[in-house]
Each structure stands twice: as structure tokens, then as C-alpha cells.
Length: 542
Image (cartoon, rainbow, N blue to C red; front, side, top):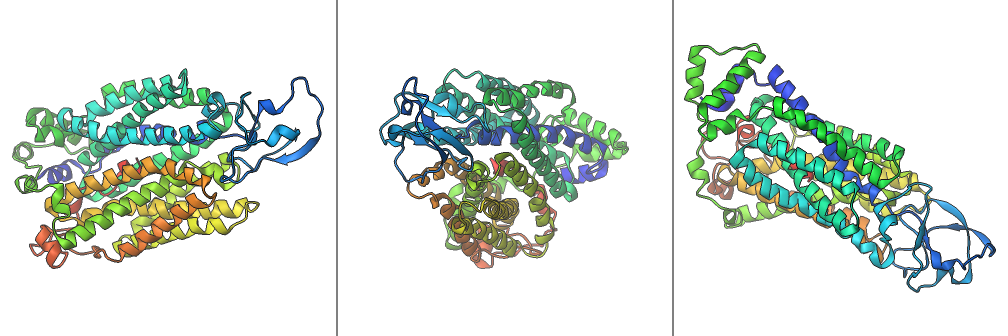
């Protein structure tokens, strides 16, 4: 009797699990806040150099000036940020557009933002790259956190790491709001990024370890919905709070309320059993069964005591990541899947963190991008039953083509550009939901965890690089969207070389992959996959 059979006996998704998912989903809102707040706190308002204004000069011609300059042009005293749709009537003097460095500091428009990290520390012109690098360092924190807290969770348990992650996230998140300089700001954000991985990864695992196989996919989608809700809610908060320090405080301070999780968040009975803490696990199982209205009898308890929650671990330990690329077919499939993980997260965050580039109201665009999350993740529930490969290919193609089309739209057609970007976000979000499921079915049982682990690492690498891609605007203002358009299209073409896995038995060994790509052993039921690998993985979004 394995642990999933135990869950079926006590109720695979009863009142106990539903309550657990309430506790799991609530932090998802705040995780979305932290992941995307730099859209507003790191925004670049229109600006000009103070040295362009003679002391005491109240004259000079007044011209209606639109703050717009091609990214590839040299940095001038009169400059603009991505919010170039704002028009300002400003006095222009002969030395307002010199290409010399600004010695008097910068004056920023306060029409949209009262303050951002850019306005506070003058992160424009020669310092503009610091803003992008800061975002990349934050994303690197997610990568470090996934490695560090993943290992710690295996040793100390999911619950412990979630509680530590939430506490550290609140403390350092509030600390960010009081950063004395940009470098401390980046360092504190790096730590916050580490805690994002700690919470989102282990909360998801805790939920799936308590949920029966038949409901795991639905449960994963529910957590994604709450992330999307946080995406939308952030737009409203940022609209009401235009000062970056106050906004950072508003999204971080409520994190201290999660202190009550000490008393309500359960441990993972599966983890307890795996670590030979059988009595504690049985107590939790009895509690869950009672809450679900399915109390255990003596025979059930005996079966629980003899349950084996892992299968063929001895075989799994014989393989390493080297086996992912040791043989020709396995190597080809692994490299393609790693690229798909990378490109999905690259484009997802490339679009999400730079919504000001599309020319529409930044708050409205943020809300629209958040609304797209829900139908994009829902539609995959229906398309996956027909074909994994075609679903992956189609959504990558939609996302890439939409991004590529934006470069042909004039700047004054901001609505059209935003709609195309929204379609691109829809395609990439759906593709991101699919890639985890598809990977779990392509990799054979003996190296499945290794394959998904490497894929997740590639995904986080995409997140690190995404902010850097926007530095290509110095070459051409269309360059970032060309990258975000071509990369998914290449991924769509590469997907054609992957096997179709829908309604087919899973490969057990590398030899199975090399021969036919499907299992040659006894056929498995579809839900066996869920027992070994969860169907949805929010950690990929990191």
C-alpha cells in the first residue's frame, strides 16, 4: 500500500486538504507582489538634467516636448524613460540637449510616480544598467534559494522551511523599504528572492504531498490563480501608493501576519514517513482522516504502518545528470526540453517586468497582464488531453509570433502593441504551464527527477537573463522584442523533434527512450506520473 492509496482512504482532497490549500494559497498573493513590484519601484519616469537650467532663469522659450529618444542614441541632458507617452511642456535652452554628462543631477517627472529607486539614486544614462543588473541579481537570488532551501527542506521538512522563508521574507522585505543606498537595496532584494523560492517551492510540495493523485493538477492550478490575483492586485496597490518605499512597505509588512502559520500549518506526513518518523506521521494521518470525516479503523492503521511511499529508489540513485546526455536520443530530447524551460521563463519575465515599454497606462497594462494568467493556465487543462507536443508547439508559436509582430506597430498605436504583447503573454504563460508536464512524461522514470531539476535550473537562468535583454535597446529599440519573438519560435520548431506522450505509457529506462520513446514494461496508469512528479510547478515561474 503506497502513500497515495493511504490518501485515497482518508480522502484525497477533503476538508483537511482544502483548508491546507487556503494556507498555501494566501502567500502566493504576496509572492506575486515581490516578484513584480520592480515594475513600479524600478520605473524610469521622464527626466531632464538640472544643469540644463540656468540659475534664476525663468525665461527661455517654452516648447511642447514629448520625452522620446531612440534607445540607441547617446544619453543627452534632456532624456526620457520608458513612459514616453507622457507629454510635458518644458522650457528648452540651447544646452538642454547636449551629449555631455549631467553634473547637476536629474529632475524627474512626478506625473505618474512620486519616487522610484531610479529617481532616488539617479539610475539613468551611465547608471541605467544598474537597474537591470539589480533585477538580475534578484532573480539570481531565486536560483540560489531554490538550491539552498530545496536541500534544507529535504533535511528539516517543508513546514519548517516555509515558516522560515515567510519570516525572513517579511523582515528583509521591510528592510528593503529603508535601504540607505542602491547596493544595500540590491542585497536585501537578493535575500527576498531566496525566500520566494523557499516558500513557493515548499508550499507547493507540501500541498501535493497531502493531495490525492486525481486532484493534484487542479490543486496546482488553484495556486496559480492566486498568483494571478496578486498580479492584478499589485496594479491597484501601486496606483494608490506612488512612493516606492511606501509601496515596498505595503507589500512586505503584512507578511508578519503569517506568524500564525506556526499553529495551523501541518507537516508533511509523506516526508515524516520517509524520514522514519512513523508515529508522528500516523498522528497526522489520523487527524486528517477525522477532519475529512473518514476516521481510520485498526486495519487501516496497520496498512498505513506498512505503506511504502517511495518506489524503486534504489534504481533512481544509480543515475546522475550525466545520463541525460549520455545517449543520442536522450541527449537530443533533454537539450530541447532544457531550452524550452529557459525560453519560457525568459520571455515570461521579459514581458512581465517591462510593461512600461508598450506605451499604455502602466497600471492598466499590469492589470491586463494579470488577468491573462487565469485563462492561459485554464486552457491547458483542455488542450493537454489531445496532444502534449502540439499544445507546447502552438502556444510557443502564438507567444513568439505576437511578440515579433509588435516591432512592426508604430509607437503611436500603443493599444495595438499592448494587445499583441498580451497575446504573447497568454501564449507563453500557457506554454510555461505545459512544459513541466511534458518534461515529466518525456524523461524516463530513472532520471525523471534529474531531468526536471536541470530544466528548472535552466528556467531560473532565463529569469536572470530576462532583465539584461532590455539592455539591447542601446543597439536597437526593437531588439528585446525580436529576441522575445524569435526564441519561442525556435522552441516551437524544436518541439517537433520531441515525442508525443499523450495517452501513452511512460518510459521507464533510458533504453526505452532510445528504442521507441515509450515504456516496454507493464503499462502504467496515467496517475502514476502524479505520484512521482507533480503536474503543476509554480517554482518554474521563478
